[in-house]
Length: 124
Image (cartoon, rainbow, N blue to C red; front, side, top):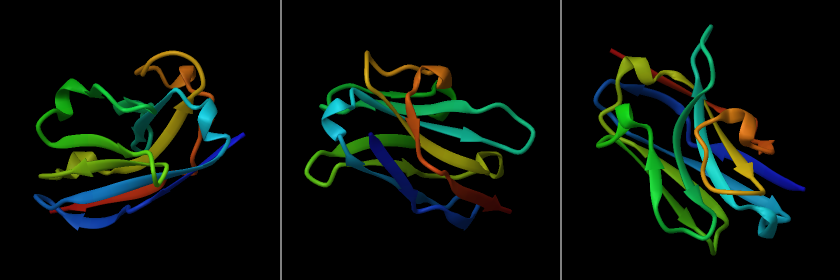
């Protein structure tokens, strides 16, 4: 079992920034990839960014490239999502999720375990 705990969400003005953290504990050696997803009210959960647990190439949703970056600290077992130049439309609950098999996927159904989510609200 792997437990994921997100933190770092909050209220920020448009144009500001936040850094979300996803701390993993438990059987982290079974983790292959970590993804960040977000879900706005009444909308589907969508892929934001992903990274292999061992590091290496990162993947960011095309519409978010240039503003969002993902990174990992394997010593701290933590994955970060740096979000810059935030927009009102970035408002959502942000989740991190882990896969035990295979590469980063943009499909939320491919992920095996999830954190509880952290709310990000961007105001004008």
